[in-house]
Image (cartoon, rainbow, N blue to C red; front, top):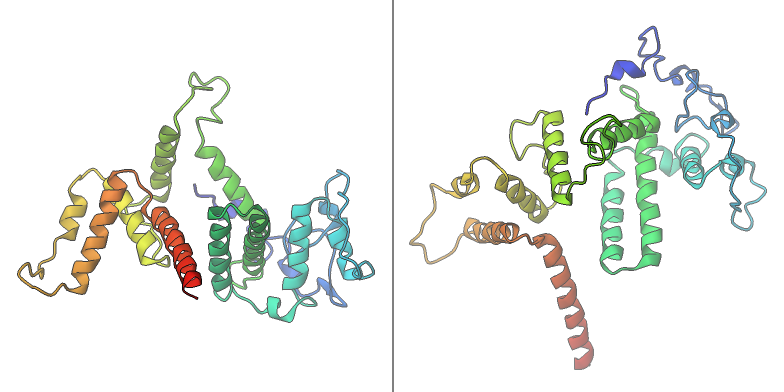
Length: 307
């Protein structure tokens, strides 16, 4: 799903003021506090804390930690109408001038390490069914997303807001769930579909929207080699050419007579295991993580018994 950027511009199409806040950016801070003026287009931006943006709903009963009740910088945090908005407001304060010097100088790139670490930590809590840990780590993931959004909003060449991100996400979730949001007069409205059919529809729409020329286009190179390999194998298995992966695995320099396996030989063995697991419907990465956890636990037990 692609949203035309011009739809976010003002009526003049002037990119310098299209976000309704660019001209205010140099004057929105007064004695270290964020200017509470409302953006010109009436929308709520991450970098503009505005009481006018709040809904008519009553505030929840959030109480500041003991000892912080008298800090006026926290007034917008306390007055935020929801927990999510309160978090967004707090991140905005920290990431802008007058907030935290370390937070203020971060970039999308410098924040990546923390984002990856928090993601892995959340995965750990889920696989351990650590509900208390999930509460904390999911919050840390949210924090990383909000900080990334705060940095994007301050970009000098192509800023965009969290509202834009959310609108695009909502559009995508609606358009990719035609089984749920079919028009009321649609003959197929309310028709039940299996989870597999829904996933197939999602993937078809995604490939069409992205205009991908290859089944493996869009697979991130930033992820580890093992999950990347599993993703490639899974995608290729759905290709029209059923022998595509086998053909791609052929190596002109392969030496069948060699008694000493090469690094590529080991890599090929791993790929074949991944391919077989995918064909059998096994999430090989998840299976490996679970097995490693069992082995780790056994190692600790054996070490304890040896003492």
